[in-house]
Image (cartoon, rainbow, N blue to C red):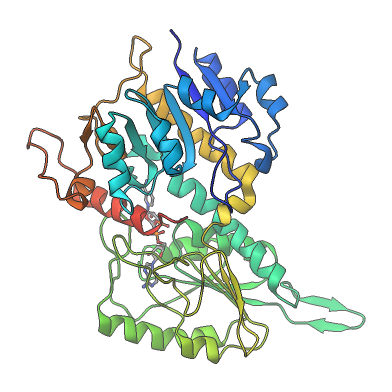
Length: 407
Ligand code: NAD
């Protein structure tokens, strides 16, 4: 019997993405699977029900998509009602916020539903790169950040020499130059701005400069942690960083922030003083905005705030959703890579908890919580030592994913 894969219509109000697009639908069907799409699931990403039908999917109601699926693909953690409808043996796959809401994973474990949570993916394993939702969606969000900033800005980004006079180019500063930050730099450069980037990882200097931007040297001595991520700064380093950044921020028209630290709330880089001292009309875009606070004082997730001194602060925690078509296309490819890796040589679905990728990615299977950090969060004893131990880099990746759970 062929494997049935379903994609649901997302339930969160700001979410426009869909977990499977028509192209991946075609690919899954070609691989012998059956695809069910909940009616209207792709509409906000500009994928019509007809386009899925043309690709070979059946467009069905939610109840059918849920009850007949072997694998249910989603973007975000579904509602309690949806989780309640899942049954033993089914697999749910998505950005499940597993470390933020570990109790939901326990509920699924109790029902013997398997849950694969993209935030838990061990990103440094090269085989996992095609499954890396955090990278694909950060890349989309970073690109969009440059556009959102230019849209909210009241002046040109490029220098304009006209018969009516010359307009100076905008100055854009990107704080945190990882996956999202580099894309933001690329967009701002293409729009003609003068761009600089700042990061505590010395390795990012070459990447920033290769895009034609200026790298601002940090006084923090080597802020690199493990697995390519940043480490948490000491309170003294944070204070020194905020002081040195204040000058850079005051000199720029646009500040885009993307800084995350594995396992910690996002570092505050743009203080209230920096906001108060910004030029009127300055635009600040905070990709790290969260309920716990972001990189910019006063940023609020999913909200745009205009301060008394006319600074626009955009809480841009879910920008990937604003480029819903492309974001869904890439997300669907990540989903397909996971599903392919789950199919064994006999064509059956099989999650191998000892596999180096699945031991990280899997929150729960066969009624057991697999991921080590999740076990810790749920105060469960560690699994016996013959289970694969996760290395420090993977732990960092998990933690980083956690701090991005609201993305
Ligand atoms: P991220 O989202 O965790 O952080 C974004 C950026 O913020 C990072 O560049 C980080 O150094 C920076 N940052 C954190 N605290 C800061 C502070 N106080 N001041 C200034 N900058 C700060 O990271 P990400 O973009 O997901 O990935 C970062 C890097 O990790 C990538 O550039 C890449 O080299 C590596 N990575 C590797 C793999 C892989 O091996 N497959 C996968 C993903 C990421």
